[in-house]
Length: 145
Length: 199
Image (cartoon, rainbow over all chains, first blue to last red; front, top):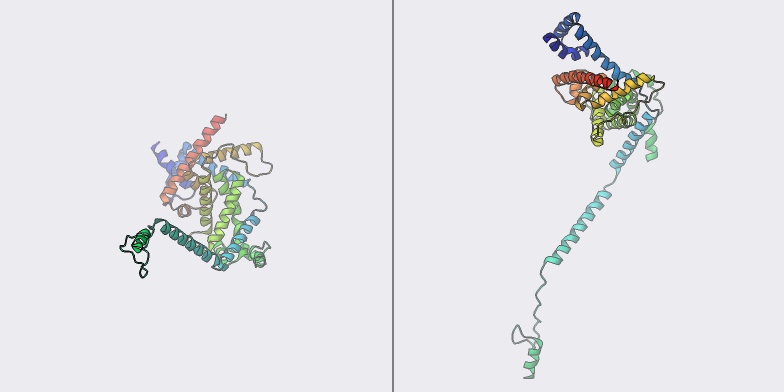
C-alpha cells in the first residue's frame, strides 16, 4: 500500500515521459505486479484523450486569419501614422495647459491680493492739505478763512 | 499614403515561396517576422491557430470568446515579436501569451464558467455521447482551480515539456510536476463526482 502511494505520485510524470530513468524502471516493475496502479495509470491516460477529443472537434472560423491580419494591418498603419505624426498636437496641448495655468494664476492673485489703500491726493501747488488726513471740505474752509 | 501601405502590409495573397515557408522551422519564421515578413507571420498563424484556439477554448469555455482571445493573442504576438529573443521556443512563448490573454479575460469576467455558459464546440455530426463527454470535460475543467487547469492544458493541448511549462509560467520544475499530478487527480475525482450525480 505504501509502495502504491509512493508510486502514484510519479504516475503523472511517468505518463508524460518526464520521470528520471531509475524511477521509471522502479515504477514499471511495480506496475507489473499491481493491478490497482495499472488501472490508475490507465484512467489518468484517458484524461489526455478526453481533453484532446474536445478540441479535436473544434473548428476554426474561416475568417480567423483574415481577422487577425486585419487587426495586425490596422496596428501597423496606426503605428506608422504615430511615427510620422508631427509634434503639433502635443505642442497645442502643452500651450493650452500653459494658458489654463496662467489664467488660474491670474484669477488666484486677483482674488487673494488686498486692494491697494486709497492713495493720497497728490499735492498741487497752493492747494496742499494741511494734514495728510485733510479732506476737501477742510481745504475749502481753510481757503475761505 | 494609407492606401499605399495597406496592400503591402496586410495582403492575404499566398507567398511565392510558400513551400519554403512551410518547410521552415519556427526559429526561421520568427526571424523572418522580425525582418518584416508578413508571409512568415501568416505561416506561424496557420501552424498555431488551432492549438491556440483549443487552449483558449478550454480555458474560457466559450467558442466565440476563445476565438476572440486567440485572435487577440496573435495580434499581441505580432506586436511583441520584434522583442522576442528566442530564449524559449516560439510555441512556449505563444501559449504563454494565449494563457495570459485568457486569464485576463477570466478576471474581467469574474465568474466561474457555469454549465449554461459552456458552449459546444463548433463540430459537425458529433454523436450525442461525444457531445455529453465534451460537455462534461468542459465542466470538469471549469471546476478546477485555474492554476491546475493551466498546467494541465499547456501539457495536454500545448504539448509542452515540463521545462517549457516552467518557463512559460515562471514556475520551478518541481511545482509544475506536482501541479500536474494534482491536476490529473482533481480531474479524475471531479469526473467521477459528475458522473455519479448525473446517474
